Image (cartoon, rainbow, N blue to C red; front, side):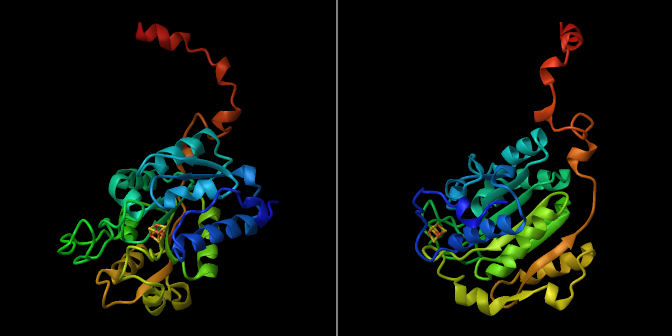
Length: 289
Ligand code: SF4
């Protein structure tokens, strides 16, 4: 089984000092070690943004995709080799703007992958524009008079799209985040974790101290994770970001057949193990002539 040090790379890390992404990378590595995985069994796929750099800094298989598109790559990889542990990383700009439709459809397909979103409520890499989870009124370089739209609620979106594992964690509570990643990877089906990730450079509102005072653990409150209704109630608790506490933990978990299990061509053997060169496509070609 892989040791923690073996997951390090020599590539210099370029995140800003104090960024919540450092903690998220650390927790990801620790979760992989505690899950007793081999590094060759893991693929980390990213989109673009500060979160998009994760594959450079973790020594597993990796793929940096296009902006908002880690999920199509992760889906293809999982369908080709469903023995692989596939971890898709995105940001709130990446995943909840360009990537929204991929998010919805991956959730309803219930592909057995884990999707971890670094949600700092701002675009970091492009220098501080408003993102889909920025609070109404938030001052940014693209919204000098404040954001006009209401923020997307990623938890409610995942629930309504049919995700079978929906969780939130916080980069400042490492043990919690490690446990959430482990539970998400162990879950059979599409597992989604929205991670509150302080951006110390461009988000002046949501600091470590702010989150620390606001988050509370659903599991300590004995939240019923099998109830979709209760999950929605908890998801909507954080609609007024200034006044309410923020629930973290598993909101919802359900069992449902995965896309791979229902797919006749791959359910017995991963595509990568099949002798596809021996498949005779002549009849198909004749039909198309
Ligand atoms: Fe982190 Fe924000 Fe810096 Fe990006 S811009 S590395 S999210 S602190």
